[in-house]
Each structure stands twice: as C-alpha cells, then as structure tokens.
Amino acid sequence: MTGHGNYLHRKRPDSKTIPVLYHGCFMFHNGMIHRVYVHIVDPGIMDKGILDLIEQHNYKLIGVLVTHDHLNHVHGLRTLLRIYDVDIYAVNHTIMEHKTTMVKDGDSFTIGSFPVEVISVPGHSSDSAVYKINQLLFTGDALNAGMLGTTASSYGTEVQLSALRTKIFSLPGNHIVLPGHGPPSTLETERRFNAGIQMFDQHKNKRRSFTMETWGD
Image 1 (spheres, helix red, strand yellow):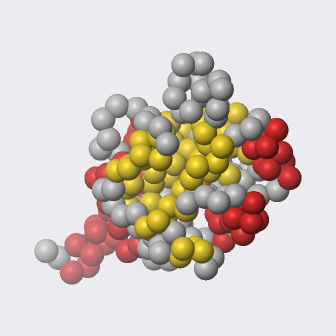
Image 2 (spheres, rainbow, N blue to C red; image 1 turned 180 degrees about the horizontal axis):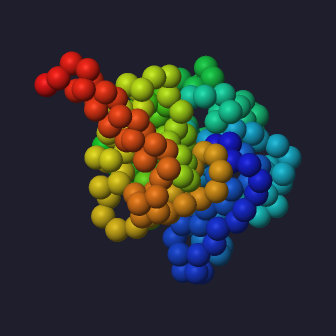
C-alpha cells in the first residue's frame, strides 16, 4: 500500500481487528494481549520503522495480502521475505518472482483468526482486488476517498465502476474504506459523495446525449 503519512486507527480493546497505516503499508492485528498476530496489506515499503514496530512489539507476521501488482504496492516484499517466512496472497501467481497463494473473486478464507473475503475489481489493473475483513475494506487503488482508481481508458473505468457498484457499494451496512492512497473513508460516504464517480457519470451522460442528437435513436 502506498498511503502518505502515518495514522493509527484503533477500536475498543475487545475488537478483533485493528489496522495501522505505517510508512506505506497497512498492518492489522487481532488485538490480543499475549500474542499479537499481524497481517500486512500492500508492503509498498519495508523500512526500519516498520521492522522495529513488528519486532519491538513481538508481533507474529502470518500473512501478506496484495491488492494488485504495481511496484509502489509491493516494493517492500523482497526485504520482508528475507526476514520472515510468510505466505503472500494475491490474484497473480507470482509477485516480484515470488510464488503466491492465488486467490480469486468470491474466495473466502481465514488466516489465523482473520476472515478474509476477496472481491475482484479490475480496471486500475487487471488483477485489482479488494479485501474485506470484517467491516474493513482494503481497496488498493480501485477506490480512494472521493476518487476512482485511474484506468487506461473510459472502458476500463466503466468496468471498474460496474464492479464497484455491484460488488462493493451493494454491501449491506457501512464499512471503513482503507485505500492505497490518501485518507480513509466510509462506504456510505463514497456511495453518496464520490466525486470521481459523479464526474464519470456526467461525462457519460453528455456523450450519450451528443450521440443521440447527432445520430438519432
């Protein structure tokens, strides 16, 4: 993950999942007192600060989730795998020449005590996936606060937006959106106010109106 700046998001002590954004990747743990099990989402960087955080708190790293295979989301993998023997979960069968545990749309599995659901949202990249863990949505670059992930074409944006609407925005209730860039958000906020979606829909409607005016029905 490639978020800018650091923030810590904590829940009440009995919560099962506590995410931490630190220097370019998400870490989240089970909140247990005696032995804390940690996942990392998108290790865009793996520096001394992150390693110290893991080692000084005696965290047990048990999995790495990759939302998509872009360098600024996986650059820290080489360093991480030199130190820890840990499984990588991704849509692609290899990431930076490292074999992964492949996942696909609709998969549900548990790593440690974490229930993970995989939601494929292609568009920004062909392998883009959102990981749903309880009420958290790790969206990579598919969905940012107030923005859509960039794509190579309007068709790519259409595909991405269709997947977001049918698979993400249709989720019941509210969720915390933890994107690959920028601040966190909530799913309800993005449903109602995402400017990227509104702009795309406006442009699409203008193109449709122009086509109808020019060529008729």
